[in-house]
Length: 450
Image (cartoon, rainbow, N blue to C red; front, side, top):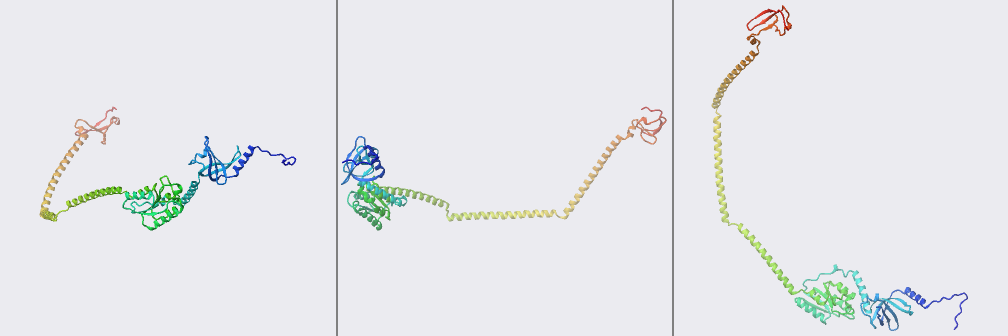
């Protein structure tokens, strides 16, 4: 065949193989989003690089896949040919061979992965409704007398639980509600039985569970219908599904989760030995408390008894007290009479002293005493006046100028009697009068000297 001719002036666009593969690769990766693919593994290869290469196929087609080391480290199982898996991958092209392939980012077992997604979705839904909240959990009865068990009637689980209950709490009555714990219709049967057991009002506590198994085996206890029946149960519930590592939705909804069915029986039952020890301890405590209380009451009785006296003794004490009061009364009366007599005698003596003759006699004696005192005072006053006069006379005599004349002195006076004190006041021929101790005479001044 001849190639078709191009219009004149048209330039051909030619790509290399590598360019073509690069364009196709980026076209696929940019146009197809991340997707989930389910299929069976074949041609699985694990070279020394740690990367995984395999084909994913179904009944009519297959596709090449690659899962690099940094991604396959998180896979929890070992892939094998013929194993059905669920992968999350992006579409790509291996440029070296131009092969269409899937680059795997996550891998899980097909059935397990679907169930896990359903389980997580249900948990999110029930948690949002508050079915997992601890606030709605009810406390278990301490000593349940009737325990209901919803489980399979065959197998080791029910026998182990009954054995534990009989050993630890033989007084408890056990009610078995047989159900299918796996397979088609098991969830519906379990939910209906939980509702019937709750309505029966026979039990103080209800245990729902089964033994261990795969996720598919335990799946009825992850169904929403069972979870809601358990949440609506009017009596406290224990979920005991599988082994300790298994976790189901009923474990989250029930009032308490037990790691195993046997552990649920131990939790629900009261250990007889522990109860006996507790009762014995309480008995001893009560006995000691009663002994202490009786001792205190005995001490109080003895104290009251010591304070309580015989009526005869009380009468004797009252009689003795009455005698003492009588003696005191007589003594007080006699004392008052004596005091009144003393006061009367004193008043009589005072009245006798107030008689007029006694007053007149006293007045006469007072007048006589006053006369004697007046005479003594007059004599003393006269003597005092005499002594004073003599003293004053002596003083006057001491200052009397005439007394000086007795010693030979004279007083020169002018003719009028005035004393002359200065010779300058005299003039010759002047007459003066001279006073002597006895008499006086007249003299004439011959001359003066000053």
